Length: 291
Ligand SMILES: [Zn+2]
Image (cartoon, rainbow, N blue to C red):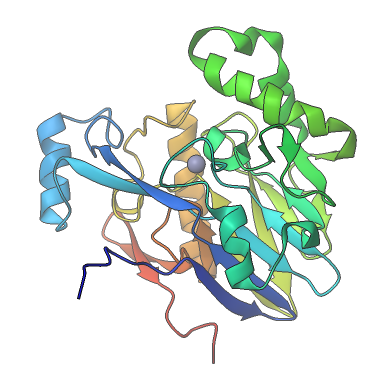
């Protein structure tokens, strides 16, 4: 037999009350790290040792991207859009993967965005054409105001602000601008998780007494972000506020014992948070939402 190469699942679906929650793997990239990305305020040797102690490579990390689709029965809501096919060779597969989930691009009614980093807005448009032709959009007002301020078009924010100009701004007339606490639709309510970006939103999903929190980028590594939430993360624009928000959300998830989906958690990206020592531990979802 010829070798086929590695294979991994890319679609996962659970029921949540009267809703269906589908997670889709947009792709995965392998990067240098964890030192330089996680624990940037720690000695490099400590970060490497921490990785090795947790049976992780010392010099490589993988980052995965997981948009979430909620079918409420009334509308199909997509939370974040992945990288977009042209942007990354091994990611940007959301649109191409939808049919495995039984969905077509024109069946997405609403696209809600947690924050405007490229791996979340990259899939809004492909080659200047909206990927989800019948969708309307829901975005945070604070996030939109931050990234569309012309001061962002130079300095460290330049590349991402330009992507906002090509992928987000052209869709503005179909957008609803919300603040933390506002609903996307009944059963999907936004929460303030600013820090990683100035206006990042999480979403509390609730149906018939069942609850799941979509945490966006508050926790980006299933070991490091949880066991060492105080470690600074390169991707957090405000590092200290990132820490504060991460601890607050982890504490809420551990206290409420509710499942969550984190955009960069290991696919299928649904799990629970357990307290462990001074930090927390990731418990992957198995059958909790199936019985
Ligand atoms: Zn991200």
